[in-house]
Length: 428
Ligand code: GLU
Image 1 (cartoon, rainbow, N blue to C red):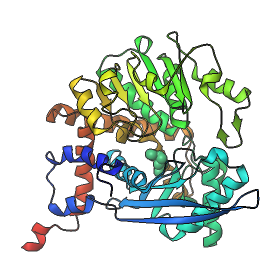
Image 2: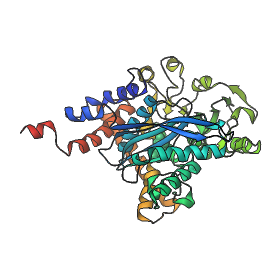
Image 3: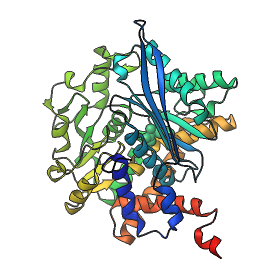
Image 4: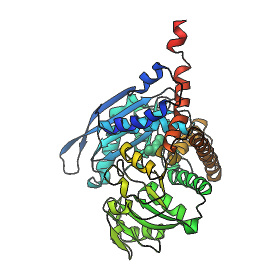
């Protein structure tokens, strides 16, 4: 474990919650490191005939509350430390929304935009071949994450089924609808964030028409949250993707930007290769500038460590809703707390994705599928309930919302770990 790495950062967040939760030394020990992890080499025959070997990981952080759950990320910057941190966050995220899962994460070091669709399929199947024994409907259930999507989940589920010679749709969530996917999974992360932001807006008395929003990241989560807020009357004044951003004080319609991207032919195969910079009249800004805009709500919806001690004091937003995992460093947290910026933490704000993944898993196991309205209704119920629980802890303990979320999750995780007995019990 790297001392100053992402996992160490993630653990600093939960350490702040420790003094509010009664937990045995056993629980602390168990939660200090991942339960198990695997590193694999994935040989892939490229279209050129050349063989490339990609490195992949899967980490099970903790399974006290149930089979582990978490996405698979394809990105050139994937590292074991990152996957460990993401699996740690998944453990707490599943507990925040009280679904019966532990936390896991997977990743492959690859720039998927450089692969053809055929190479991508071979890589995805190869990853499943490599980690086959490490996943399963009652062991660990992968899902999409950054730069993976439902088609990739479909290939992966298919590969798993081929190897096991039976159909187990519950092994992977975020699948295409026709392969056992769930209604409402595609925009679930955005929807979940939307329900939480709406609750927060009620508490902080922010009316949509008077609220400006900047969204960093135009992937699945970023696009959907921008669209949902826009449709509800919020003004989306800035958007960005990995190449840069656009700003317009009058606001954008995220759909027209997506349309423009599609029309320009910048969505190629399963990946969007375009950049939002190209499409409409606007002022071009960098990702760094977007974060420092004078807006009411800032939504980081891309990668980790975007708001750090370097830029935290320049943040002007009143509310930060973390749709990405780990966008704010612990040092930035301290600075933002002093500035009285409200942070709706990732382990709540982006938990809609895994919540609907849970619904998909339940539907797969039952062989009985729900209407989209039912999915949204149940998602909303969970997101609103847990926002209220966290808000109550925030008021009662006088802690920031992130610490409140960790307190809530930690209590649930610890209860599961300690249900098997603690040192105190066995000493008697
Ligand atoms: N990758 C998503 C996340 O970070 C979804 C995980 C899942 O559905 O299992 O929450």
